[in-house]
Amino acid sequence: MILRPDGDAVLAIGQASHAWLSGQLARAWGNDRFPVPTPFEEVCLGALQHDIGMAEWDLRPARHPRSGLPRQFFELDRRTHLALWAAAPTRVLSQSRYAALLVSLHGTGLYERFPPKTDDPEIARAVAGYLEGQRALQAQLAAEVGATEEELARNQALLAIWDGLSLALCRDQAPHTVDGFALDRAGDHHDAFTLDPWPLAVDRLALRVEGRRLAGAPYPDEPALHAALDRAPVLTVGLVLRPG
Image 1 (tube, rainbow, N blue to C red):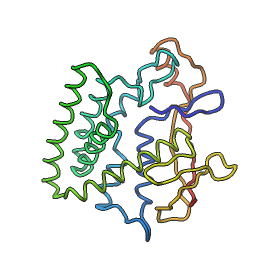
Image 2 (cartoon, rainbow, N blue to C red):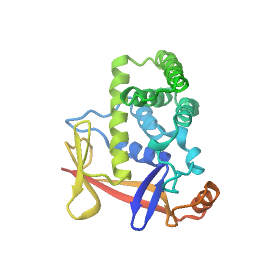
Image 3 (cartoon, rainbow, N blue to C red):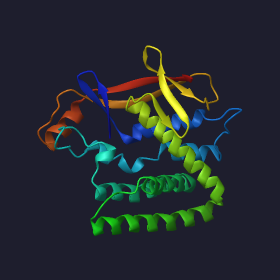
Image 4 (cartoon, rainbow, N blue to C red):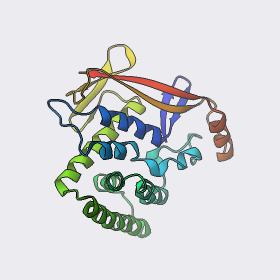
């Protein structure tokens, strides 16, 4: 879950909608400076589905005790986070083994780039077990689809870039830099942004993401929070990207 400020309320954006925005970026990616993702359909599907493990959780999110709002993706307890990521690749297997492989690589990449700091030996063992299990799955799927290490590293890096840009856009964070790509606001237009260098095939990209508007926080308990989410209006946020 991502909470985007919206006046005196917040827009609760599910991770699956954020991933939809990542997929929109993936489909527009590529020009004379930056190659088109390949295999195109599989990589775009991986971007679209990379947070599928959190889709069901976001329908009934845990309540943060201080804010009275849903816990955001970076506020999940470690056991829940591990369970969601461990299950995520399997949810994509019936669509595409390659996309499932990218989802798995993205999850382990998060734990490799941001290793959890813990003194709890059970958590440490759980993280090690997750990484071991996912690496075995990755080796199996890579052999099945015939993907090379170089190709997978390239596509894993692309997915991390799309993920980072999408998160910044969903959280309304600019200026922000993701792996050398500088995201900034485009003048006085609140929902227009610039990106430099420009990696897209078009001169202007319109993006969409959906969220539920929560205006009554703090909510006293999870039943109240979930009831509020059920009755909250669903809003579409339109965003525009232009060259910087």
